[in-house]
Image 1 (spheres, rainbow, N blue to C red):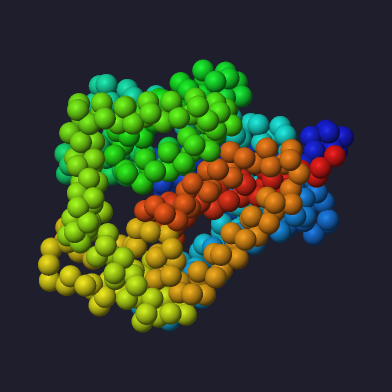
Image 2 (image 1 turned 180 degrees about the vertical axis):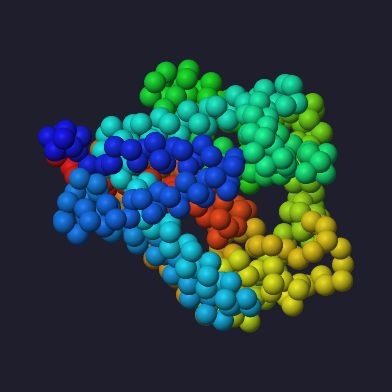
Length: 432
């Protein structure tokens, strides 16, 4: 057994399956969280024991360090912002619970720490993205997602309740895919996973495979309706396509994408509505821009108010909704999103500044600087190994876009997963 482990090199034999299981279960968030928690509990003793023996069978020293630093850059702002948050006990409890991410991130990094584990994990992520893409295309053609239908049937068999309420199903105005009508994040999730899909398709099937995967995934992302996902996916196409196709062919692909968007606007009213709403922003009028951004200028004004009121550590991670009424510049008027306060800032930089203050912003900048430094000083082969994870993380955090809440359970876990995949694939294997 020892000889077999030595031949296997760095990594942990079952960690790729654990990571892929966690991602595959994202449509069932409660079960996915249970997998994450169980992975943290089962793995922490083995991971810490291996680390303090000085072993590199799991991860190299630099990979341990970078994974931990990226976690702390995320978690420390949350912990410090909880000190005087509006709901202090809840905020402190959430910060304590989020410590479970650290051992799980070590598991994620160990999953891609050697060539075999990295190939299996990245190929598995590509397969999940491909399955979700094909499932969404079936939904676009038939009106039903087979994968979500199976998940919903299993949920009803176990609990007697469906995944989504009838009202949520009736209000569906976009492609929801495997995540379902009550979790309209398919476009964002698929755009963030697409670097793995495109990388594997290009490696296995060359330019034709890359083009086919790019078109099919792009069609689903456009129909899923989130304009933030459109921007994210455009960045992925530019980053990935430049290497696979070259400048001229990539330009042709981007023109094809614009044509596809225009064609969808003709046959899909929701796509047409989003394009029309985006065009209103070109008028330059404040009301038009706010309408085009679904009320986000009002939210962003409130975020700057929160930063002025709590410059050091913000109003607390996930405390935006409690602080919003006091900072709402349009108090008393119906918001573009309907009744109730805004739940988060919908923009990465403003969310960090408003909820965790300047301290949190500096911690995030420090984490980004460490990630960039690791990339800069890594060898060419290591950078090539880590490229899909690097692209996925970079486009998901692209600051000139709108974003999901980075301190929410679902999206926070997804971003930390990408960070660990980046650190593990870049530094997990010692250079020969």
